[in-house]
Amino acid sequence: MGSYNINGIVVVVVMVLGSLVGLSQGQGTRVGFYSTSCPRAESIVQSTVRSHFQTNPTIAAGLLRMHFHDCFVEGCDASILIDGPGTEKTAGPNLLLRGYEVIDDAKRQIEAVCSGVVSCADILALAARDSVVVSGGASWAVPTGRRDGRVSQASATANLPGFRDSVDVQKQKFLDKNLNTQDLVALVGGHTIGTSACQFFRYRLYNFTNGGPDPTIDPAFLPTLRGLCPDGGDGTRRVGLDNGSENRFDAAYFAKLRDGRGVLESDQRLWGDASTRGVVQRFLGVRGLLGLTFNVEFGRSMVKMSNVGVKVGTNGEIRRVCSAVN
Image 1 (tube, rainbow, N blue to C red):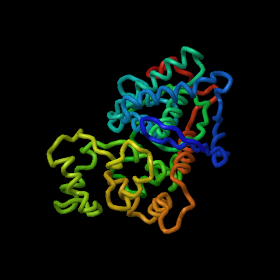
Image 2 (tube, rainbow, N blue to C red):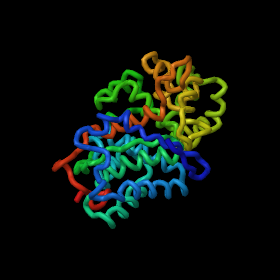
Image 3 (cartoon, rainbow, N blue to C red):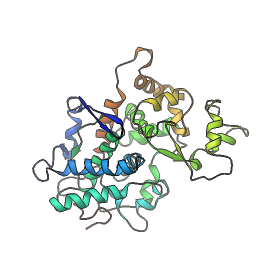
Image 4 (cartoon, helix red, strand yellow):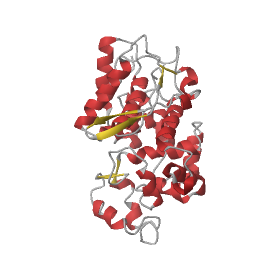
């Protein structure tokens, strides 16, 4: 374990290689895939993410969310990055994604030193990890060796998790990707960094039940949310999902759920359902349940997710530019 400082944020580096044995060798990917073919690849992605983060800290959450949205549609194959009418980029859930310029920047630098070797899918997976690190979270070893997909369709985004989803619906969507309930809670915990637009949760504040607010919202927090998102106001205004520390990757997000201060309905429901509340409690370390550390378990779940539906070997391609198939 080690630590370093970026813009005043102490970054704890915990390489959980031992706990990731088995996970890190899934479906043809492996840690260190480019160690001889492009040894600078990972450091280039890391420095690129760090550079963009120093200019715009909100880019970290954008990259993390982009990787999630990529893996849940067609697998982790960078199909989210392809431009054009009717592609995943144009689908409703993806219209507010940001960070494409970071991936393009890293790809240009990598192509300059080892052309045609490193996939855009791997760059995105590495950038998601590095986004967590620069935000104060722990690092993990990212298995690489993915190839890029050639198909990107907006219609394929229909099964992305949604902000109104019940816990049962969320669990099924994750199970469809071979991710269990603990993975669900850990990965949704990525909301510790990032924001949501008022249009995705304002309905909870004014007219949820019988003209009143969602009763699961802490009454003391309600005026804050209403002040940020007034009835009839700007629906595109951004609000921190971990209100007050939305640029810092930590377990405080789970305390917000416990206290009725989850911004999205789907997030708050993780505390209201017994099957997910126990995991939230373990990540908080309450009641003596100290068996799980959020940072470590988040890394484990990210590795599992990053191996969903990957293309390896002769399947797919290595794109020359990430926004277009070859």
